[in-house]
Structures are given as structure tokens and as C-alpha cells.
Image (cartoon, rainbow, N blue to C red; front, side, top):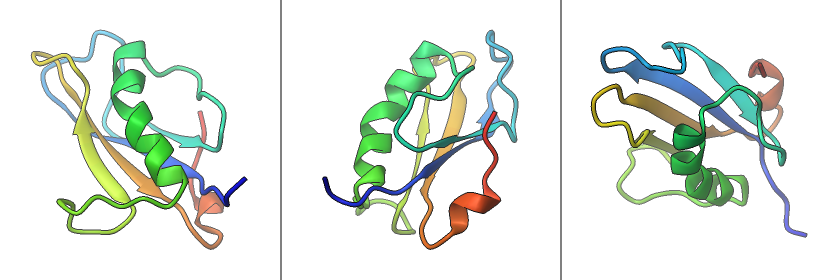
Length: 97
């Protein structure tokens, strides 16, 4: 298996009010298992990008390598996520809920 990296999922914006109670600043660390407490819509939106980041991908449209900003599918109460690949000991600085 190739090396994999942990990825921090962090909420950076909530447009209106999230019906699942997500708030700006909530964050999870993903290291190969599904983190608890994230609504299914948000997690399903993030999953393809989480997988890519875990195995070293970057996205050419983003300003920084190893990061992406995406929104959940709820267009009215949208939660905006920032996903960051953590390298070289950064995982210790992230929190998991």
C-alpha cells in the first residue's frame, strides 16, 4: 500500500443554519476510518477529495497544494469545508471529535 496522509476536515463557513448542528470551527481528523458526527451529505461530498488527498493528490485550481475547499450539497444551508492534507507530524496539531 502506498503511503497515506491524515486529512483535517474543518468547517470554515455555514450559510444560514446547518440542520445537523455543524458550526464554523468544527473539525475532524481522517486517518482511514469514517469520523463520527458528520452528516451523510457533507461526508459524501468530501469523500472523493479526502481519498485523493490521503494519497498525495493536489488540485490545480487551488492556491495551495494538498488542500481543497468544497461545500455540502444543501444549497440553502450550505456548510463549507476546507480539507487539508497533513504532513510531517502536523496530525498531532489537529483535533478529532
